[in-house]
Length: 333
Image 1 (tube, rainbow, N blue to C red):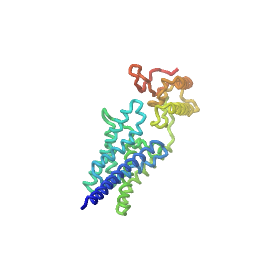
Image 2: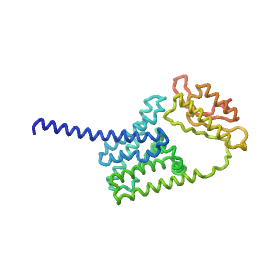
Image 3: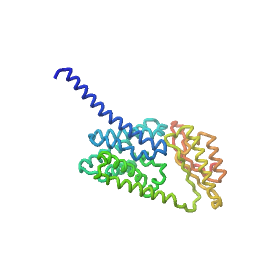
Image 4: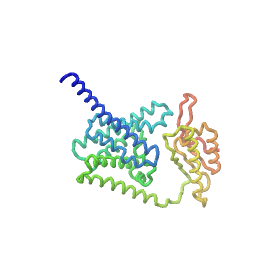
């Protein structure tokens, strides 16, 4: 073979390699984007049920190293985006936490594909879902445990489905999401052949049963409150935290929800002081912002209540932000 022919053959080979790995990169970017969408806006919760399908299909014929790195970079991008609020403590923490949390799903993909190839069985698309949940649970344990963000957080706006967390915890939702994605990938890879269509039965049954249970729970009439404590939880996206706009929106939202709680019982059955809890970093700059602090004081005084509000403060010794989750006064007056 002459040198020009050798050069042409080499160029074609390089082009094929670039295209091959280029597809890997595009698949990673696509999957990461689909994972972010439900977190960014609650209305996109259905996307989670097919977000992992592209990367699972791409991993079908790839090496274990390729599977690991595709899973790792997909979830690294996803985690890095969702964990932007941690950058208030320094970007290095966002990088480290995203790195640490991305290893878990990457390992889950490798183990699942190893089992599927070894035993040449799909086990009704339960392998990846089961391993994913086990490793995600393990990630929440120990000194370095950081159980956030989970795939189940994508369903925060899907109220009927998430009612099963009272039984399964957040990992039940993660299991359903990965299970549906895995089953869908199996069906697509098989060309929807009749012999494998049975693999779709279990996810349909599980999703249907979970939604039915959630619907029944939501339709139940809540029992009459007997406690003088009230917990108020906002719905603002956490990736928008630490900004002035977030705090303005948060104080309005928490004020409105708190007023609703106090006016929910027109008969006025509850007398005397109450405890109102606003969660971790509900109003992150409340201590530094006199206007917001005065609004909280006015609520506490107006309803004769004790308020426990999660916020940030700065230690003058090192200038670093710290979260306050302590009731340091009996009453905000």
